[in-house]
Amino acid sequence: MSRVLVALGGNALEPAHGAGTWAEATTEMRRTAKSLAAVVAEGHELVLTHGNGPQVGNLLREAELAAREVPMPPMYVAGAESEGEIGFLIAQELSSALRRAGVPRAVVPVISRTEVDRRDPAFRNPSKPVGRFYSAAEARTLVRERGWVLRPDPHRGGWRRVVPSPLPRRWLEGSAVRAALDAGLADRCVFVVAGGGGIPVARNGSGGWTGVDAVIDKDRGAALVGRQLRCDSLVIVTDVPGAAVGFGTPRQRWLGVVSVRELQRYLDAGEFAAGSMRPKVEAVLDFVRAGGRRAVITDVGSLRRGIRGEAGTRVPSPRVRSPRLPTGGASRRR
Ligand code: ADP
Ligand code: MG
Image (cartoon, helix red, strand yellow):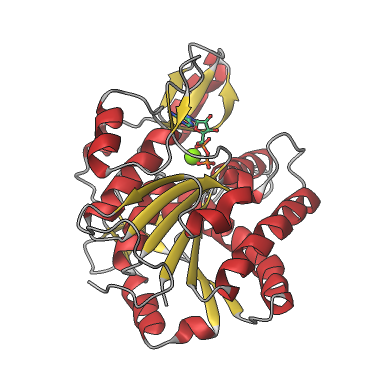
């Protein structure tokens, strides 16, 4: 049996141009769940992770609007809330889809914490925009009253809060989930883990953990989860069929099977946009270099074929000689 980590992007959770309602998210997830159930029915051990950008944006906005009546929680609490909300959405739709596919499983969302290092250079250079746009006057007030860091957005006008995006070091619940999977629990459960890359936490002086206002890139988080769970495959599901070179230009070409070396070359040449395709390509390279058997970037419609190695941008492990290893055979554990 092969262990597959699927990382769901924003579009597998919500339609691109919708109003952001729960009903829309349910419909979208129902479609995604059908493909995911088919993966389980084919005999794979399935683990899920997911993004949370739009959901966290909404939660922060809600908190801000309600601040006069309900105390505003720290930003990292929105990370926890989003894991609960999205975990529930996935549990609702995926458990039904699994039952219908004849492979009933309990869908188990895990509120996940991810260790970050306070010495990470990202803390000296907050770069990730979160929440809405503010006027210059509002921005000054927010800096004074909340201590936020805000940056002007030259393209769209106005100011935006920026937070650090440090590297995820360790997913704290990872070894327990791995032990559960190694004990054969995948026959009964599908774990949903490290949503939004996990809630960033750092060691405090008393041997515990303190939440940190930062965002972890969900694709980097997925690579970490894939390594910690010793997954055979990592599948990053997004809204395009794969990674392209010359993206958006007349020479655009989608990448199919591509070696680590070739993909690294395109990455170095700046073919993948920062904040969208670049972190996915970095995650894929990171995962296979650490011993993963194969990584794929694809869209929801091609998920099943992507796992079979028939669609998407597919990156085989640099250590595996034959590119035609069976997908369902005994997995190579590291
Ligand atoms: P997700 O929510 O799945 O993380 P993102 O919007 O962050 O989605 O990343 C996917 C987007 O990356 C695509 O919709 C596409 O517009 C963009 N993109 C940037 N560069 C490339 C590229 N070289 N090849 C393919 N897509 C690219
Ligand atoms: Mg993204």
